[in-house]
Image 1 (cartoon, helix red, strand yellow):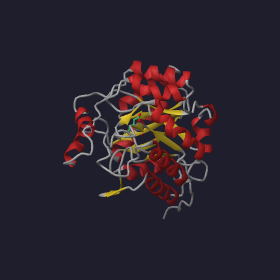
Image 2: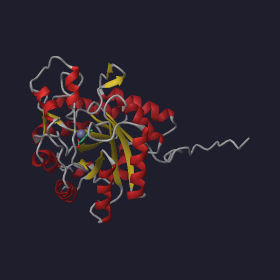
Image 3: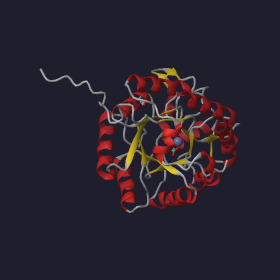
Image 4: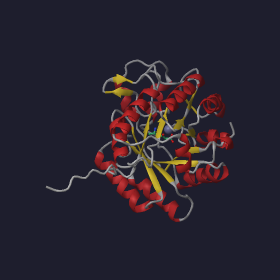
Length: 324
Ligand code: KMH
Ligand code: ZN
């Protein structure tokens, strides 16, 4: 019989050295008010959801805004300002502003919040793609607002546009100009190759934080094989210049995030990408999903990163250097 391995170093981040960074994306632009009454819409609701997620263990809060009356995705900087300051006052979490907005917004519209608020962190989507949310039309007969089915239907004919020029604009304006670090959202291997292109030219600097995005119709689906493929590609292209996180849109969110943690990565949960807590059961809050992934991570013997640890690892500029 072979020697029994009693080491705790079964995963690259085991042994108490490196905590798993939990990101919570609290509202996003994929889901709509008809789908769940628990989706935060107003500034008060988004602030409350973010603070709850941070208290449950999220070190990073990924933020979109919504029109407080209709619940439609919004990129109005004033809608962001209304929740950013209260969250910053109440928590120590890193506040990450989306530059993806909604796939039907123009680049200038999407960038207005980050250009105005100069956050510590922003998302950066690494390629143009189809981003189909229209299959959700089949699930509901009645809608609270007319904009909801119209937005879902629009994703059948629109492209989520992130050209090389768009990516460079974001790197320049929000990165070098605004001092933000990035959550590089990669939905397929070509987008990792694109990140590698900018890395080789020195236009993006380590430590790179790569979000493997699974389960979006138009990108890689949420399977273990796809996650391994993305990770192998990133290892080849980025070497040790990066760390990764895993998000899966839909009901495989927690399972794929758990897989990411086992593989030595970080995790993202939140109602932006998944409105359930178990099959067929709506999550009542973002904090509920954070608490669930935290329990799993800790049961795996892995520590959870504090905001201070996440700040040091991601190389962000500090909460005192933002414009809100
Ligand atoms: N909800 C994710 C699948 C962004 O905000 O820049 C995509 C996302 C994009 O988070
Ligand atoms: Zn987002």
